[in-house]
Image (cartoon, rainbow over all chains, first blue to last red; front, side, top):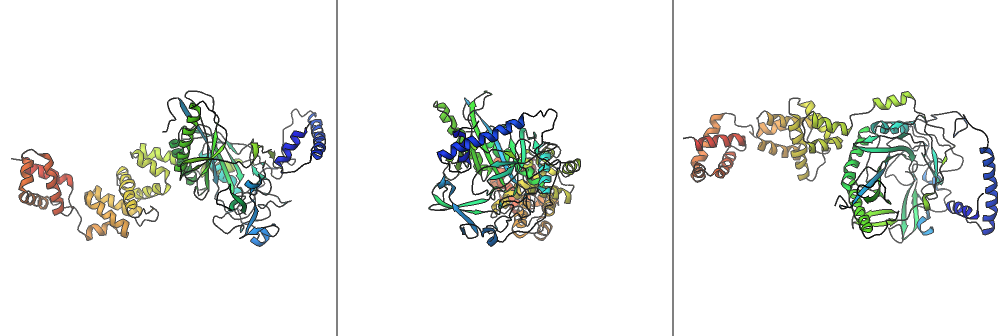
Length: 96
Length: 483
């Protein structure tokens, strides 16, 4: 069960602005998701090796060889603001 | 200053970030660079565009295994990557790919300080804060450069086994030398390829409880870190002694003023909501990778220092310097190679004593940029050892070797600095000096030992330094006591 306060906390971490009403709705929806996970957790997994991945692969690696890079123009093409080739963003300190 | 006082002791643990000197980034093929114009080494992966797939750099894994081997860590049979979630403009994915509960390496020990773990992760972008002032607090905008984003990092975490700022500096220097010796990083603190954070707390002496810690971030030299830690120990001691409580916070030490300032953290409450990175499969180093790492281990500074001290009889200070500063060790080894018959101890003293002092005196030249070669210095030491030149002459020769890149043999021969080995010649100089200085000679005869100094000096001057001071002393005494 997730309460409004937890929703507000998660929203703050995700930088989401929720209205009181939305926080209430999400509390219900997120609780339902957790209930579903609880259902999954009720399956007997004794003797089953925990995994973090669905495919049984290891060591998928690349060689240390340079690939194709973007130009500065391409890299910053979608930036709302750029300056001297850098992305210009509002100061995170001011926003906090 | 090192110990807070009789009542309290400091407990310090370190987190060291080492940028690996691979050619490309951790999860994409963009080149690593330092000092290039902003955003000239980016791609959709390190810019965090949707739908991209990171793939780990094999060499970064190999470098991490080398570090693990050097620190005596245990390598996890299978380690995984996690997403460390946080919102900040230096990381457009809103998570950093790091390792969490199954790091690639854990346990280990370097010079008595236990290593808790070492894990792989990616570096964040570089942010320059612009606006009303240069300081973070007053700025209204930030410029973000993703060249650094995705640079492979190994984070090394120690156990809280350190107890003073001075110890942190020494140990940090040893760790830096060790990683440098592995050839896996530039370990340049000013450029940020090695970054060190310290967790500092104090507690009543003998207690086994840990006090509330503060974190000191990102000092750009071990000397500053040492000073910052000392200042923080003093601050915390003052608080506790006045019955106050230390607040857990992140601090910045300003070396210019010696003051500590609290920093605002990137993420409230450090709630990183780690989750396994679904885009990456586990790293399971096979025996080939582990054997390659073990085989690639060079002689490390800790072992080298012990060998210099115990086997070659080199003084502790010189042995320490040459083990921590790779360039000096290589120079020293080069000397022994070129003149195998010279005494290692004498060679070490000439290198870390005389040459080091002369380099400092002449505009603080670095060893690497000085024209003195290991072979040349070894040659000079050989001549001193064979008593072909006096110590005093050899020091003059060294000055020319540093300033002009002179060849010692040529200077010695060209300037006629070879010691007078013909005892008849030296004796006649001694006799002439005694005759010319009846005053001091009489005093010595009268029992004033100190007066002999003036006569030794006169003989040396007469002989142009081409004589051994001890020999002159001996001859003078012989003349002035014999009767």
